[in-house]
Image 1 (spheres, rainbow, N blue to C red):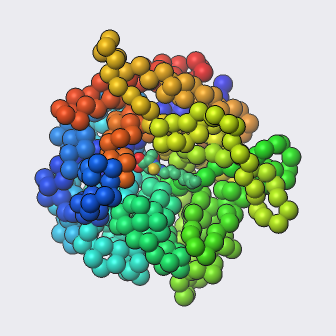
Image 2: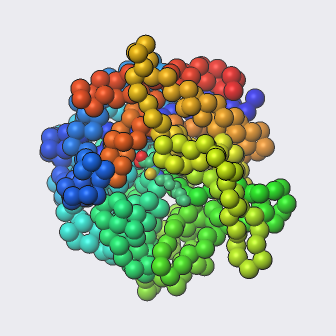
Image 3: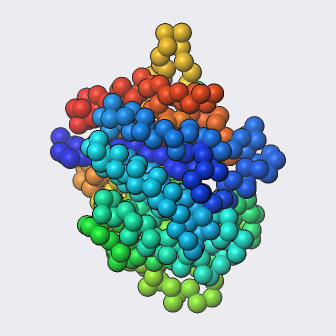
Length: 449
Ligand code: NCW
């Protein structure tokens, strides 16, 4: 049986994508508030001002999770609800909001998994340069220490940050996400380096300030290489996609290894070294610190083979391959390979901290949301996961992204990832058919796949 007893069946969200109430409870501004005000940055010029209104409806969300049978909830803390200016005074209204959320989860038998940074970076710190400022790691360390002191009596599982690949890559490199910069590669890598130092310092601060047992991890995303054949050469090409990517002078497309190699092995992939800021070697002791688990967000797999003078070569995907509404190909083996490669390389417990699909959902005339494609996505991706566990990958949990349809960053509300349908005109919530499928899978600990 692939899924051992105690396998963690969860779901995930992020503060800016669901909370709304941006001007309530003493919250300070984040870079996403500012970015959404710039014309043309977000589809339909939407914003997260109201999102799913979870700031007011978190109790209802907890009840929905209970109904689905969810065992663990991964949510993020909004930095500026705790520290409106990013540093300085603590805002007790924000603290109370998360206290209520955490207490509500525990009362309902749901384990909280807290992410400290899921992209809503404090605007006041952005004015000081954000992650380009060499002091930025210390600001994050301070915030992490405060959260640990406030919540670690009840929160055991801590994730320092979500997908730095996207935050720095899209926020400082392509300009597609907040704060919206298109910087030269050496500046992007400078921000990357400071971010990594911040994550290391934060991991240490969480432990040093903990009031109970804590497990600390971090979450990466990236392209997953699927080997074209089971030859050793193609397998190595696929590993290179994850751990040793090709980077160019014009753009950096960060992958899993760009984060995990320095954080866990204390070494940057060679292709990043030319762009690092002076004196980077000094910081490696802060970047590479002990971690208890790895969070893997897995969405996009591509097929690769070995190639004479390159680290890998992409093959064309089959003509007419199914795609989600994000245009991401339907490739269940993605979960097999990503967990297998990451587990064998780093030898730490792995959690799939995000996986899921956006679908073109609506309420049918029978009042149901008949998202059969998402049901099948769950079946097939989880079957692939069970196979990798059978083959030896140490995977402890799976968090479906996302509990709710929500604000999908630059796509606004156009993409629906939820197990629960949200009607944004009145914030009413309806379980989709996939939520019922997930409930069944959880009840039988995966023995229905
Ligand atoms: S866009 C993205 N997302 C979505 C977002 O809603 C969530 O906040 C993120 O954590 C859903 O999950 C994440 N991630 C980008 C994944 C891209 C993987 C990199 C591929 C490189 C080719």
